Image (cartoon, rainbow, N blue to C red):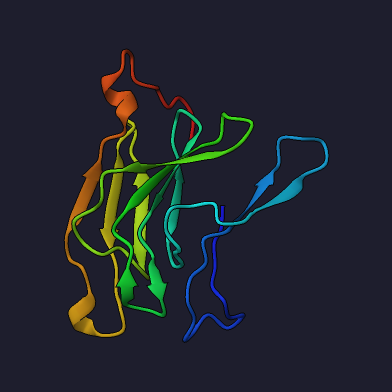
Length: 145
């Protein structure tokens, strides 16, 4: 999943709320454009595929690098015919450009890094997100990566 901005260059531009998703499982991969899809316009964000086939969308900013950070997190349910986005707990630190999000073997998501336009904007803390499936019966297992 990818989002973007109102400029082809990406500088001095506002983020948009639409997304483009490709389904590579079908015999003929197809792109689908989703207009006004997410709760927040964002660019420079990350998407992590969770073990339950949902997408964890985190970080980004609404305007240019280091400006108007989006701290809200979204979960996109790809198992529904009509993709649905829901809110998840917000992260504490702004996670923008140069951020890393990684699915851990136990099913949690690790967040670290970020950097705006100046050294003072560099985030030197990590955060761990614990998806709801960790608390609902048997958690998913990752067998191969």
